[in-house]
Image (cartoon, rainbow, N blue to C red):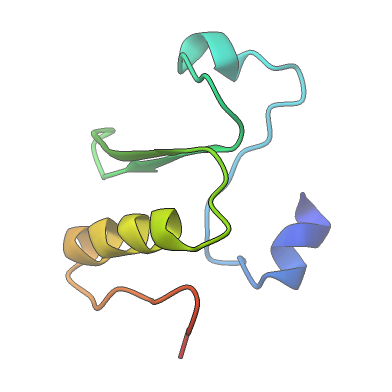
Length: 80
């Protein structure tokens, strides 16, 4: 994961890797990957489950992140 994060320039993104699989029970995930957007204070703002090569899922999360942070969202297919 660390190599992938460097390659994708995710240095500012907080991520966790669950090598034992305990999060499946805690978060009740049904698919992989499952991404959670968590606001300050621990409120889950968005859950994006599964893989979507079209970028629609990632853009939806980007829109929600932008609203949460008060910034413009990033188009994952055409980042600037």
